[in-house]
Structure formats: C-alpha cells, structure tokens
Picture (cartoon, protein in one colour):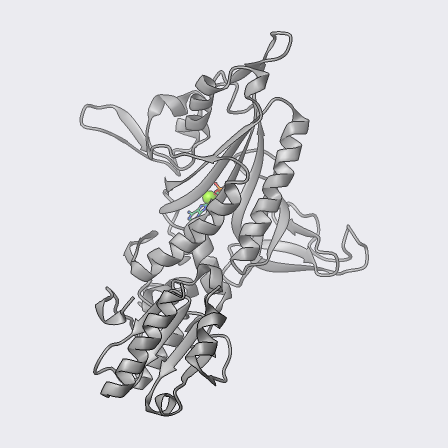
Length: 413
Ligand code: ATP
Ligand code: MG
C-alpha cells in the first residue's frame, strides 16, 4: 500500500488524557482513535493489526469448534433466567427501547448460547460440541484508563463447549489450554497459566497472564519451575515455591489476556439445556467458556513490544511485513524504489511504501520507528548507486545493504 494514499497522520505528541503506554503509542502511530473513554476506532493500520490477531485466534479456534456469531442486543428475559439481569447490572448497559421493552448490550454470551444449545443438543450423540464467535462486547467498566487493555466496547473471542460428563470436559479443557498457548506464542507473548478465583463465574478457572508493568493484576510466580498463581487467591506471595520447593516466589504485575472457565451446569440448568443418555434419562449439559480479548491482546503486544522510539510488532501481528522508504525524489531513485515495491509485492510480501514527496528522510525514519513494522527497506541515492537497498529489522540497529534478488526470497515466506 502506498503511504501517500493511506488514511494516516502520525502524531509527535501523545494526548494528555492517556496514561497507558499502549494508548499513547497506538494513538501517536494513528492505529487507533479515541472516541470516548474505553471506546476506540480502529484506523487502517490498527484494523490490519486487529485482523492479524483475529486470524491467529481463528486458526487455533477452528481446531476446537465451529465459528458463529450472536447478537449484541439482548432482551431482558434471556438474562432473567440466570438472575444475571440484576446480577450484572453494574457492568451491563441496560435500557428501554421506544416501545418500552427492556434490552441490554451483551457483556458476555453464556445465557444466549445456552438458549440456542437447548434447541440444538438433545441426546448424548450431540455431545461434545463447541462453538465460538469473535464479536463485540459492551461493559460499563469503571473509569477505564488502560487504553486498549480495558474497553467499554471491545471484541472478544468467546468459545463455549458442551459435554455429557466431566471426563469429556477435562479432555477438551486441556486441548483449549494448548490452543490458547499457541495463540499467545504465535503473537510473540509469553503467558503464564494461573489458577484463578473465577470471580463471578466459578472457582474452576484459569487465566493467561502476560507480565507487564501496565497490568492490573498481580501474579505470584516461580521462575525456576514456571509455577504461577493469581495474587488474589495465592496464600503468601513470598517464600519458597510450593511446587518445586527450590525457587523463590516473586510478585509481578500482569495483564489477563485470556480466561477459561468450567461452568458446570450453572447456565444449562436454568436454560433447560439437557441431553438424553443411552438409557433415555435426561441430564443437564456440562458447559465451559473460554475468552480472549482481541484489543486487549493488541494493547498487550504494544505494552511488551516497544522501545523509546515506538512500536516493535512481532511479525504475526504487524500491519505490514515491510516498510519501504524512498529517500530523494530523483527520477532514478524513484523508479528503483517503485520496482522494489513491485517485486516485493509480487513475491507475496505485504509492503507499506512510504512514497510521500516533500517529507524529509528524518521524518520518514521517525514514522517507520513509531509504526514499528518488522522490516525497514530504504532506497536512496547511495543504495541505488550500488544497485542495492538498505535493509534493517525494527528490532536491530545495524542496516545491511542487499541486492533485491536476495531480499525478495528472504521476505517471501
Ligand atoms: P477483567 O478481570 O480484566 O475485567 P474478566 O474476568 O472480566 O477480565 P472475562 O469476562 O473472562 O474477563 O473476559 C474474557 C477476556 O476478555 C479477558 O480475559 C480479557 O482478555 C478480555 N476482556 C475482558 N474485559 C475486557 C475489557 N473491558 N476490555 C478489553 N478486553 C476485555
Ligand atoms: Mg471484567
């Protein structure tokens, strides 16, 4: 994509009302725009990052179940059956429509999926099953100030699984853990799996925690064996590791990027979600739910992968693979860089081409550092003289001169 035609304006200064690093960098790089506290637009660069993240999540989730989508607008009665219309009134946006009907914007979808599953699942032969969606959630979060980490409107991947017995749930739960680990690993994050209290849901839950200064949670961990617990419930944040006995426990701030819950029959019973066993007896279906926050992941990647000059995207989440910069407006340099753009693009590489005229080299370099695309390729009088381009990874300092014939295969993967 040619930067001269892109809907983009980077900013030197971060807005004063943002304190979180992720919001500052993502706003300066023009990935996102803040409409109000906790509500952000995804501008073209941010949209591409979001799509990349969703792509990785979808790829891993498709191993577990089928994708579907549920509405954001819910009637009161579906929430009434579990008592959560009142139970979640502090979090859920609830209002009356013009006809006086009480409706709410979904902060989560256990009630809705249980109502649907009650029509789909009838016998033991219909189990186990799992479905997921990637959908907009609304939560009236108190004074959100962590940028993308805590939105009032955000995208969640929520997967729901249905089982006849605990053993089936256990097997699936372990598979889901592996899929979650793969998502975070592919996106350049190292996540600790912690046992959590589960808050409103149940005590059988786990959280995936990424160490970061900006984290609102505290994790107690042992670096020797990898034992980790949410500080909310961990008894004693100090001393020897209860698992290996050798390491010393350490408390560290962390961001919860994902959450998995064994729900039991809490949602299936009120929804009359039951199945018939081999002998014809009815039982409530056992459920579990599994969430990942898409924008929270994007914000977490920004918190973990940046330096003083800007973002440093891991390849799987980067808006483009290559940022091509042309320095000089001379005919010869231009045509060499146009050719570079064409060759890379033809080789299947996603390129953001900074072809802007009347923009200084310094400004182009500063923008490239701020935007944080993994590879920077520069074409200038100097490189063209040797029929080469200058190549540098965003995470490294020393550029290399390379022939196009070396660069194209290096990047085309
Ligand atoms: P938290 O304790 O951080 O509020 P939660 O326990 O309410 O999270 P869940 O209801 O389990 O979170 O949601 C599943 C996932 O959705 C979370 O692990 C997180 O990644 C994401 N998420 C939850 N709330 C938000 C939010 N307000 N903004 C962005 N992502 C969120
Ligand atoms: Mg919450």
